[in-house]
Length: 145
Image 1: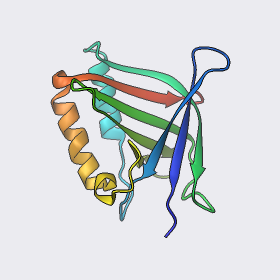
Image 2: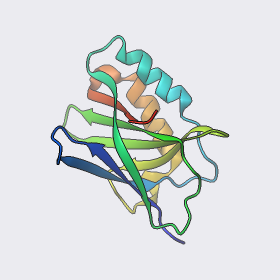
Image 3: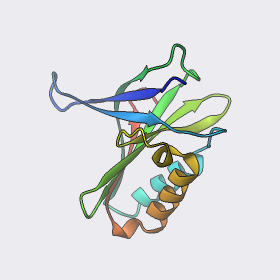
Image 4: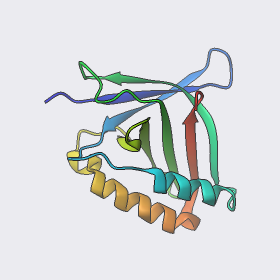
């Protein structure tokens, strides 16, 4: 079994600055459409200043696979900062045929329980329904969307 990782490169503030996060592949029998979660977070960002959305993904590098599972049109990252300083993130890839799919989770872990799609969906439901208890939610898009 080959592990797939996604290295997401973000555009830095300066010309030479670069930051990145490495996401685990999400373990799932089927791909999960994330349009509902993206729309919910976008709608919340209109009402709450701790929820923001912007374009800043420079590139996504797929590692560990001889051929990527899909060709993605663009990517979206959901980053969550909790009040206790814990952070978590989710990577979404868009395909023309299937839409916005959950493909990765962060922080990087080889623990398969942390990367199961049903557990991630429960976490996202909790985050959206309890957004007032979250320090910050960022919805970050590819520069090419």
